[in-house]
Length: 137
Image (cartoon, rainbow, N blue to C red):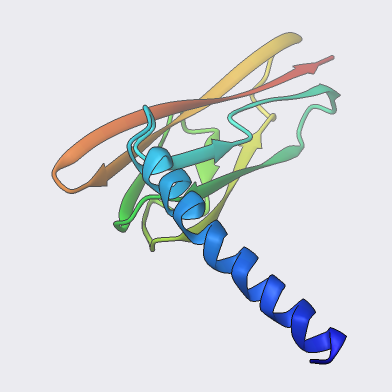
């Protein structure tokens, strides 16, 4: 038997052994507190920014559950907008949400703007608030 065929058999055996582990991790993620949807970038601070500018923020959603998730984005004020309002995120899937904050109406000092992200899957609804901070002169 050639050494390469032995190595291939061992690699195949390792992959087969890893399948139950990967399935159990996927199950635990889907049963977790966030229902298998991970949100990255919900609290961001751009520091000192120029007045009369538009600040751009990015939120990443990862759907690790076994079902599609419907996402609805609701801005907290008129100066905050998102590039999507309703979106279906397949399973597994990634969705970027770009948020734009207009600083034209901002007084001097620190400001925090927010959006509410609502998730719906299999009759369950939950939400997450994303905050975007900046300071203006």
